[in-house]
Image 1 (cartoon, rainbow, N blue to C red):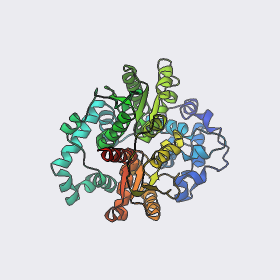
Image 2 (image 1 turned 30 degrees about the vertical axis):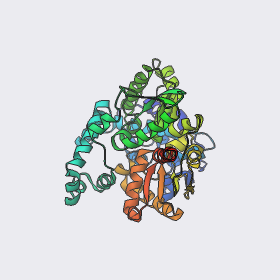
Image 3 (image 1 turned 90 degrees about the vertical axis):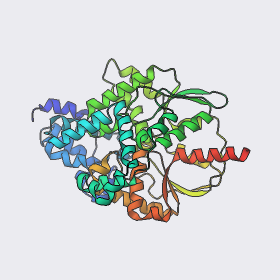
Image 4 (image 1 turned 180 degrees about the vertical axis):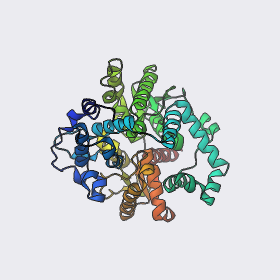
Length: 441
């Protein structure tokens, strides 16, 4: 280990670590602890391990496993009476581990190509969208699935994610639907100008859901700009210990949105929204960017959050029984719990039922369902069972990783064959809005 104890204390956020009273209130809020009942798989246990490294009692290698097994849902922060910022500790610890660990050739390749080239640049995101469309439209996905090639090469977890992937639009449809720099005019009286944050996975896989959100904003009186030069929010990078890359992403996005005269930065992905609002924390110690980051974060709004602040959009009947899976980062970091529920309550003929354990994680955790599939799938199976118990035919979500993971979880349980589907809240609201417009014709 090349780092000194003083350096480790600083990099592991030792001043934050010692605030943990080890009271145990976090235990029942932690999905991995509830599943295992193993102390090192609890927030309290992981903080104790990080403290042991910072004080020279353990090595980084000895705590890597328990930290890797954390989903990062941050429900423990809500439960903590001392207000310990567990997310800060977790992200600092993972960044420290990545900085000092020996990476194999495959891991280096995945991090460089996947995280830094594809998700790390605006061009990479466009390339990823084209590549996925080409993979599907040429039949390569069908062939690879039938022959078991995806599972053989990338593993069962990736194969299940690939099977759950929705059909993505063609490059032509993406272009016609408004790309970088496109302005969507407000419908009716203009009340605000917003810059829409498209995200990476959301824009690649759930492009339609982004356009549903934009249509809602237009009808609420917003002029919507797809801000050119934006990229990934950086959440996936900070979750995987790539702190430098995540901060680069934050700076790129702040600079891109600063060039535009807008009132708000709006997104339709709970995890992205949490990251955008935490740019002020990521860059707090950077003298050039701290103030700019704080201003940017203050302007960020989730789609449900801003729609509640604007005059109501006319909604038409959309019958059906639905339940809602909260995005952990939307609930625990952004503190947006009632907002999506209030928006669903505006939809005529829609029957909403709460899911049991609504405040618990679904197991997606960004890329957690790929890196820790056994735990993620166990949590997803439990969540699928709770969906079934509600009798709902639709599970409404507010975050793309949750949407993809729960699609896979319902497929594993056979619920997709029973007609149960996963749908983004923006799609539900747009369908209701379109129903209102049809009634007027």
